[in-house]
Image (tube, rainbow, N blue to C red; front, side, top):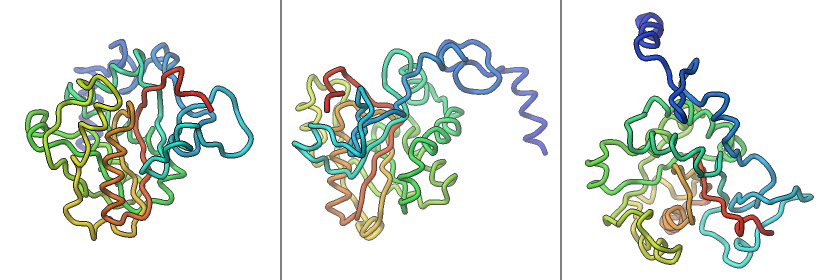
Length: 243
């Protein structure tokens, strides 16, 4: 009852603003103009890594990169492309204490990953090192994973730990440097928690895939049966969309 009364009052005092351009909106999210600028990745794509294809193909198809070097995860999906139109919203969640965005983003993740979620036992967030968690005060991936697990009646597990502090992946000059940076950076302290289970590994952004690859390898070493990756966004480059 109190929450029902408080929300209109809070909306009056602090009206919801578009997370893209800060224009007034009816509820937390994007305004119509910003929404139209988002590139949603809901078209044809690689059956494994989810990278979008430029044209629809018959049946399930795997991109050349996954055929040449099969990833450690079983599949990966993202809601939208990480670009100038989506970056502000994701950085607001990540660095600006916008935890009010978690419920909406979790609903998006649920819709984008519904087929995968139907098969999963446990939602596992990509972890922060404890030093970075102390600085930031929260792990945005864990907040979304916890909400998603609750919405889908799944288990939630902080099954992974970042065993060593690594420089930010954004500071790495190349994909090779990113892979080296996170090599053996993740561990599973309690393997019994994931052994034999189908896991959903959740993160905010996938750039080269180095982080989720390292996490998936750690989970598979702990005998996880399957690891599926779901992210809010992923970097999509022109050369990535080749079959």
